[in-house]
Length: 191
Image (cartoon, rainbow, N blue to C red; front, top):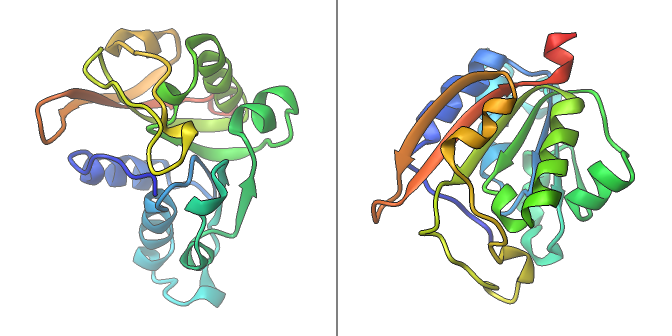
């Protein structure tokens, strides 16, 4: 099941709490880390402990059906079982979010499609939170039967500066590879 580095989790929690979104879209749900974190720190930490008290809308997109398990329903209000590129770029099927999370997603698309996906997320949200490997030290093919885990593009830290950057921090994973956490102000924040 898709998962990511842990070194940036506390920083991401700070950013999520700062943005304080009422409606979140987690692109590439995988293990469900961001749904769980959003539910805990946007509802439970605000005193809305029980499900019937929750007010944050947490949605996700997941293309690999086997990644979705019964526990995801505990944190997500809805998971779209679809390819994020097809849903957000080609169909323009979703809109109006306060925060879109792309947690280790962009590198799984060829650069042109990844940039279109990022732009689509930017267009529909007040903020976009990116976690992305930086540089060429991240080769990866199909994992656990999931061809969508293949890395198809490489990224540099400065490539995201074409958007209004609200926050950015570099991290190293457990073997010293660079990755970035970037919070972009989305189009809905600027209008």
